[in-house]
Image (cartoon, rainbow, N blue to C red; front, side, top):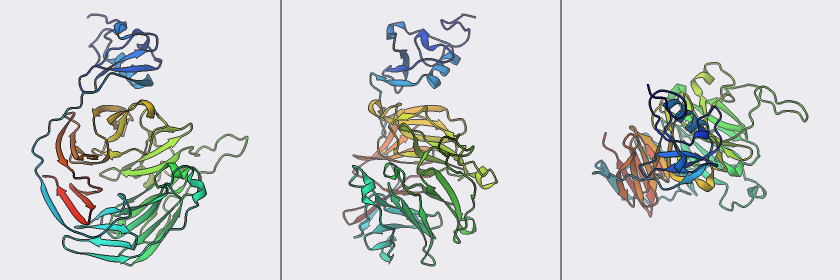
Length: 416
């Protein structure tokens, strides 16, 4: 068997690299794009592309996973293979005005909007005010240079019984029982750089199993039973004392927006750590609720770290694959696109050049509300396969996407 330049026999890896990177702890490298999709080679700071060699699959994989990329050289190939979109369209007049593009959410068979007057239910042929909802006032002194923050956002439970109004980039949230028209939880995540992350909140289950997971401190999540609001995740997560080592279960991590997996066994947190590095965190919800009381503090970090980059679109492609927008390791040197990660291992499993905008996963595809319209991307094909010009939805439910603007409700349902 032929021995490769890395000193190992075996099959050639999926990328080329300079000899300095074929080691146990490779130095930082630059990704040199080949012009074919998102394929690239790795070059360290002392070498040029002329020094690249073929290495074994093991050395290529190790360098790819452990060599922190300093940036990109070249351009990606964005694959556009649009086909007939199909699906079902509907549109009707609807003079309802959500507070912003985060204030429309799905209900079984209809939609719920958060307006200046309060909650408004929207069906196929009618809309009516449910009632007002209030959050405590935020302290504007803490907003630094973000005049548009904090801002309200709306979440709904799968069965439509509960809704939550949260203060994204703020401190407070309120959970309402829409059936009983009563407030079941007032939430407060205290104040510590909250203006940098969306409020962590997501609903779980339905009916008698309904719960809500939410931020209760800048670095802490908890789960509450509904409708009673009982705390299900009592535990000790004390902060360290000055001059003392950190307690075993202290989490130095700024919690951000939550995305729950299709089966609700896991969730991914769009948070960050000092100084400052975006680091999405996967939490095993099933283990947490089954008795692993510190599962939220021992989650698995995805990506090798993204310098100064977080608060970005994230979606579950399926129950084990997470799509995170923007490709790279530093906000100054990132490219439009999506990185795919295995939630169980934390390994990157693929990339897709092009997508940029609010994003949902459904049926193995990614749906992106881009500036020009709704895009449909197939990660397996590595290409955009559909496009609806001018349609920019802000809410999704099981393959139906909704846009509410200019006094009109438009929806599109993808083919099954």
